[in-house]
Image 1 (cartoon, rainbow, N blue to C red):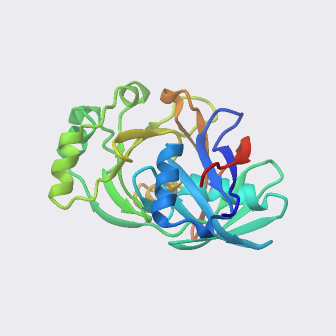
Image 2 (cartoon, one colour):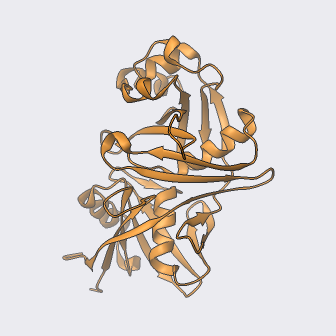
Amino acid sequence: MSSHPLDIVDVFAEAPLQGNQLAVIHNAADLSSERMQDIAREMNFSETTFVLNRSSERARVRIFTPGGELPFAGHPTLGTAWVLGREQGSYILDLEVGPVTVTFAQDGVCWMAPPMPEVTGTLSAADAAALVGLSETDLKIDYVPTLMRIGPEFAFIAVRDAQVLQGVTLNAEVRSRLLAAGVPAKSVFVFCEADVAGLDFAARMFFDAGGMREDPATGSANSAFAIYLRDHCGAAPGRYVVAQGDYMLRPSRIYLDIKADSYQVGGRVVSVVRGELAGS
């Protein structure tokens, strides 16, 4: 049995023990899908990645939540590329969704070029408010509640201010009703315009990984969010900063670089643990 070195890093973290935790399992080509799922469940982070093979320029990687495999996810992409290739100018991950390039800036921010998301529908204000345990007057009407897919599927719901955002509670019964009706509201990204210097938006993201949970930082959701802002909310090209995870005591900062014909999503990565997976 081959050894399986292990890295644990914090992604979208401005300092250690912030951001979103990620476990990176190396030399994983000999692990079955079932074993990978067991390990991801054991780690119990939002995601765990498995490096199947690698070269100096790229690696084949699979991504698992505690509940299943994902074709793409943002913080695992940034974190895994940083672990494998941060000494270089850029590194490519071959994911289920296709190749994703991550570049490493001198200021420590890792930038990825995610796939292009697609809009799959909209939500009524009544359904959007009910989904997050609010009244319609708590929503910010400038932003239409919108459903998007970028591998994972997200519902984007804007609320009036940070006080409303703090009180959001996902209504699992409403979510189940919408899913049964064919509405792809699998994960829910709730946001507001920020009133703090240096931040543009504050957000929370809820998803199901063997039970509903909140995510400290969600690169895939913020990737779709960038295109939602540009193409559906009239946001001008430029750089935006999103705060996520603050209500979980895991403050995260996600950087959006939105251009007229492209976009990138970035964040910093911090090493926490290096070791070896036992009994794998």
